Length: 507
Image (tube, rainbow, N blue to C red; front, side, top):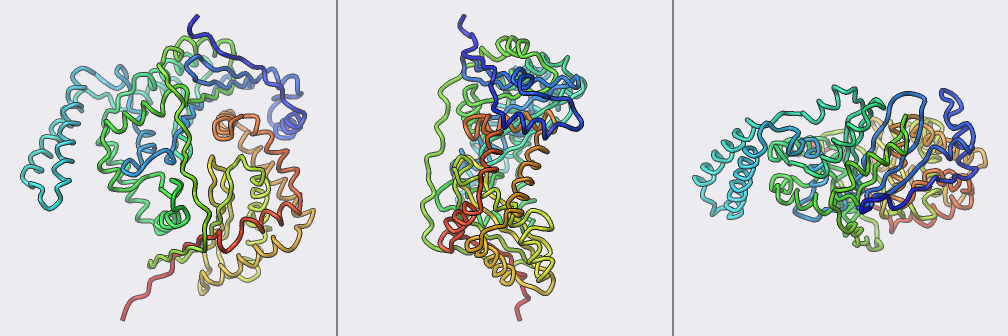
């Protein structure tokens, strides 16, 4: 039997997970009341084409959450196709050869004509000042006519409407630097419908309305450029990362978005949207044996290939502080970032704790110092990266009226120095650990949240069990760890600073 499931495991979970489950779900549900019950509800299996499934039984309500996690994001792009991962997220809702079309054969001809005309337009535009404007005008008119012709055969939003008619909720998708995700919730008697639609989406995608959707993404790019904070974050990323693609915006560069072709998008799909690069988490009122049977029926015959290699570019050690200042007639703000290791590094737990101590809530150090006591800021925050590759730990502040970025910057450095030189109190550290636990509990309160986090940890960290082991790691963080980690990463040489200074009218 060619497509037999390669493996199935009933996962054994440690006592720490039992404690977590009891604490997190004691109110509101009767879910996982003891370890044995919890063990029975988690199943994982991988099809022979490499597609992995994580299945968690929760029978409290007759609903199921589906989370398809594609192990591809903006980090996998190169110059010239930046923004493609995000654009493809949009395209994945456009249907297949049977969904979203009245006559695919005729539509395909119109699509091919559009592609050919766009390539001609692109080639002529490359000539710059030597481009034939009359020819470009003619080609553009022909392109628009082909676009109108293709519209005759399209059934708009049919994929989404099929699911909506069957009671879908939370139908959405999102793209990050590290991954792209597709999510939906359905009544539990619609599992086979989802299986057939999702398999068709990845086996037979049609990138219809490609150029129209590209314009939608172009507008998103313009919206980002029109926001001062958006412009600053992009400039900040450019100085913080000289080599690694984390320095690129997920939405991509405008010139890339406007010139990406359907052929480039299809090549991207064939490399990254293969079964061996997908993980599907299913949580809710399900029977794992039924899920396995349907997975074999609908997904097992999708051709696959070798799993794409991870990004090999490594950001070199920073040799000195970097700064960028944007002059803008808007509210000043400042971003301070320090390079930090990936989510899998042993220091990640201490960095997460530092983020809580520094800026989580009104009792945090930065809020008390900058907002309540000194009154030099109206907003402060801090965040540790939880990424596949080494990322940036961010401090952020918005100065209060009459105060400056410089004041906020100096006050933040003062608090950072305290983290290095003064041990945090047991009460403060315990509070930070409680906040991290509570945050994770909130994420796992719903079927959708559980599906999302199971898939995320399995793909980004290499094992979904790390979702629960994270609690143990946080619990083991000591005051000495906080000091050591702050001293190691929060150095001037390892620092990048970006700010918006209010522009003043020139005399």
